Image (cartoon, rainbow, N blue to C red; front, top):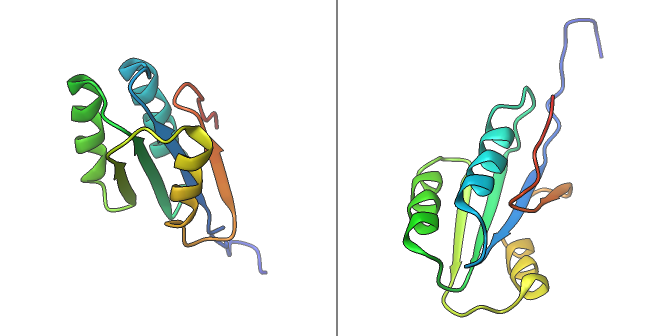
Length: 106
């Protein structure tokens, strides 16, 4: 690879959201991903069952972003099962797993 040629690493971010998540932390986590110099090709957001309206409003807003795949599950199935559902949706071999209170730093 020559100088000045930059290869984009293809990767996905996978996050599960459920009713007890903090909307503030979730928003911080999402914004930290979306403001990185190296963006993921996709962010897979799995809603694990029904969530409060404030959290749902954030999910709806982020779902409008073309790199976000929103996967709402009607019933709460637990973190492991929700993440397995999300893994069925990712298209890249490399998957960065985040919790809603994780922050990406440059």
